[in-house]
Length: 247
Ligand code: 6GU
Image (spheres, rainbow, N blue to C red):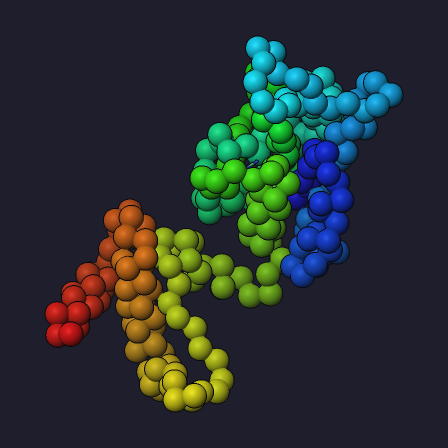
């Protein structure tokens, strides 16, 4: 997987890409992230990449020429159908399904938006989709690019030590995760739930599923509504209801 990032702040990426799983993914060559300085595509000697908005108003707008030239340059070295993704609060909301879709690509391009936005002609010519990471406004698309890179990288074959952890985690299953515990079994009077110490795998599985259902219903009821419940799920939810009515 190759990810091309177009940014006016290349330094933003150095430390995050050199830490932890992203560093390992890049060393293993499962992942290559290439950072491109937008200013390298500015034609004038001052490397200007922004300008005042036509029609007036606050803030600056990213100029079309450097961005379009940068994308065209990268596309000339990319395979066909390489997605060109503009990171902007106006984009479609990034989620696990989108991460899984991008993880299947050979390559994609991320454009980090800045200022009040990008000249509309960039969208008209080179952008194939727009992504937002949530309903809030960042100073720029760089942090959002790192979110996308991180979510995609951990789905690539060989990047995570234990691929099973991908399947059981939040969102892959459509449920939030069950609570986790490690040693010690007792800490300041707080005990690890007995069933987890039992070695009874079927009971443990059932307990975890029940806790995942409980958590999801409490915290993210919409997620639960989107899920197709098994007979066991329905029974576990009924048990939770019965326990709640006893309190
Ligand atoms: Cl992708 N960019 C910016 N600037 N703000 C955001 C965002 C992106 N996603 C959420 N907020």
